Length: 155
Image 1 (cartoon, rainbow, N blue to C red):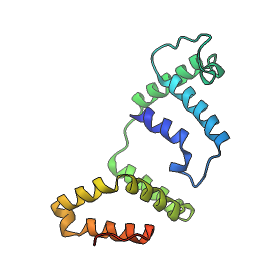
Image 2 (cartoon, rainbow, N blue to C red):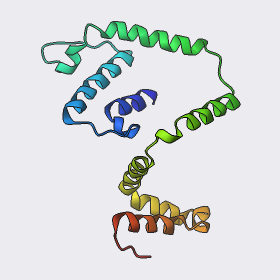
Image 3 (cartoon, helix red, strand yellow):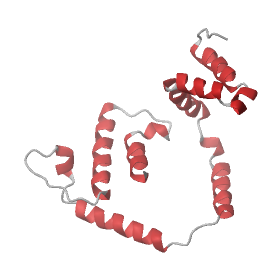
């Protein structure tokens, strides 16, 4: 799961940052993500004439990257865990430090794109959940959709 998360972040920086990547940048990020994935996998890769160019670009570097990944996880195993209180305190401080730098409109737009993709399933789930019914969350989401999309709903 962590590997999938990081690969997704590497290939889609707009999920975290307020950026739009060009096609050229997307291609470069795909190569970097593939190299990262190859570095984190246990299996040895057999390279040949038919291997994709993005695997051949960093083929000589992969063994060194694999060693770095192994050291990283060895260091994690030796690290003392932080308490929930320490973690909450650190996250609260980060939130305060970067509060002015977050573009909330971009974040809300990305969140709405996700909601829009699964709109019907979300509405169904909200209408079936007793707590969501009490809070009228399905109705509220329909109102938001109507405002954002300028569309008529069956309210």
